[in-house]
Image (tube, rainbow, N blue to C red; front, side, top):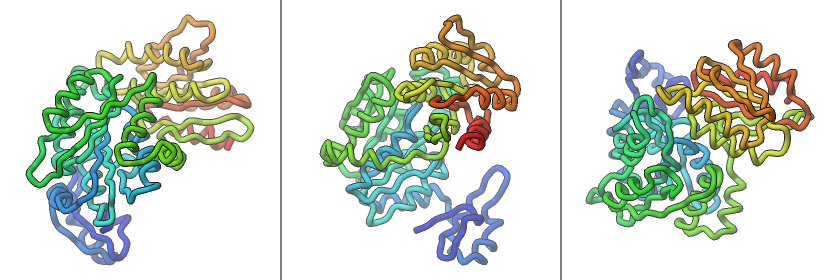
Length: 378
């Protein structure tokens, strides 16, 4: 069933569920949905999806974590789709609206339903898990995302572990948890998973890209794929928009667009990916927001990570990045109060063979830089 909450996307035969928001009421759009040939289902979206989920017989894999969850979700989809009928969260639909809508896209033919789960505070993962009732759960890592709101890394681990709910009578046995042994508070998450009667299947790796890859191998083996099938399946991976999307720059190397959002773990992950790319490395970084008292420390930590990844130039933008400093002669760093001035100097600096990574929190709109580079070189 194709369900929509937005009449702008309605097509004849779709089902329209009116959802109320802070500034609108979906019921006001019911006449328009009917005019466009939609069936109207005037129900509470979360409650309806929760009842619908109970009818599904597919595996339900919840993916959460401080960084890499969207990339891992997309990698898992590419891999598992070679053998199974898979439905996944599209783009960033990982909240109290997106998760129910994704559940409603699954049907009797679905083998595996992959649900990305995001959060901003305690209780939100639990609320999503109560709707989705995951048979499998993967936590990519625990970092400092939203530490300003949650207070500590342990509190973040606690919030992520809300995905582990005790089984209900109707749920099948043998639920599995895929956990990162390299993540802080791993033992705590294991305890939470085991208490909720999940079998723990660990994965690890020396850096975040390797950890995500190894997570896919553990999940693939669990679902019966051979090593060769896993490797082949991962070649079908396609990133979501603004999630480490690589573009060729005509005669000037590559552009890595990871501008959807930014946090310390996400930046570390991207720099570890950049390390694998051939060419002179340039980082364009907008502020990482919502870090509270950790902001100065975490922005400065990026400098060391960048040097370790072979970055030679850093262009920064925003109030939080302006305190970043370096005394390493191998690294040039410039701060810009104007995005337009940053773009102008960056375009003048890019040379053939360069690898340019653009990253920043959503509020910094660093996709403006990506668009300018593409317009110049693509």
